[in-house]
Length: 544
Image (cartoon, rainbow, N blue to C red; front, side, top):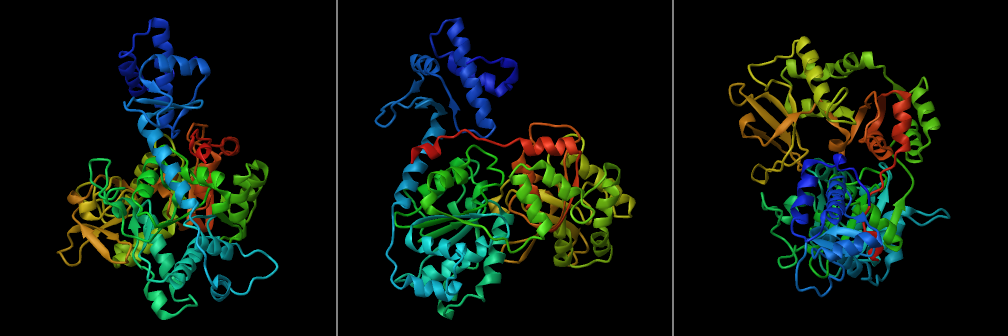
């Protein structure tokens, strides 16, 4: 394996040098060894859980004394693990191996359900000639302890799971304890809203409806985060009490967190994962949802009919997913919606979209109305830094808003400043991705407070100085928008190609919109974005 070490970051090189100093290699082999480890470190930071190695690489690693190939009965822990032609850091091999074993046990567990078809008829209607994929998903969930329900936005994943919850409660001998969870606070809030909106429409007895939970958790809250450590209150020794755990937006869940979640399930628990396999994978290492879908097709149902989107948005999302640049650009260039926005119209367009928001703030409207209007429209950037990046745009939008007579205040805090929380703070029940708005507190002499809507619909307010790390959210990265939906989305790509761009990134941005999309992009950059597909190297799907 040949590498130019100038491509590696300082941490990659420091990690490789730290381990190579514990070998007795000569200079030539030491350099090869360091390149292998620097590559492993670099790829791990890019989301891969392992790297591929040659037979010669394998022998060199084994000769180092720091790697082990057969780990099943190993008495000594070593930092590197080799499995077939893949090299892992020991911790991530353990996460992958443990998760695969646990999911195997779950996927092999099946149930006999008497009168299932008649109960399905009541929830989904009598089947027709066409396949009702929502009904098929419910049938699988009733018969198997592990179930994946995938599909694009608007295909009814949460509608289906609400019916599944009623169905499973009816079929159970005793009321099931159910946990509804998602990776972020925003996604948990959306899940709770979806369950609540579908609950009254369920064709089931009132006592069954009463057994379906209304509250949702973030995964960190469900497992009992113990910051700043990576450990949780609930694990294999102290499992969760729930009979069924449902996880929405599962594509966002990384390898380590999914492994810890499955480890914390009690032995007879069921698990249902909901997610869109075509969205961006998790920020951290792994591509768990996609790997499990590939490995376990008999435990997966894909919902294929969309009920939500304007036809143009669905066609655009499908074209991007197929990497059909010609069709996607034609849809964007159509005189009707969606449309392309010129760079020089960018800031005026954003200010126009925020006009009603500004008026609500100036007129002293209540937080729920201001929050609803803010959440209607969002600017999504592919990049955090640089021209058209989220940080630069936030500054430009703020300046333009101040010119519209929005009060600047005496510090960085001002009425109408929207902020996104960047780190979890369980003590304050604030989590990475939560959105709040700074407003005068009518109950406290108009002092500035930051208001947040909680998953249960209540409103919490905090002094700005008591918040965890946060930043202005007039524009946000597409990565940060995962788990959210907006009526109107403005997607902004850079004017030059960069490594962040991919068709998964663009697909994720498009599918955040319910009603309208506008795009700022050069055709050449748009085409290059569609042509790049993210392929994470993992070993999870090979373990089934």
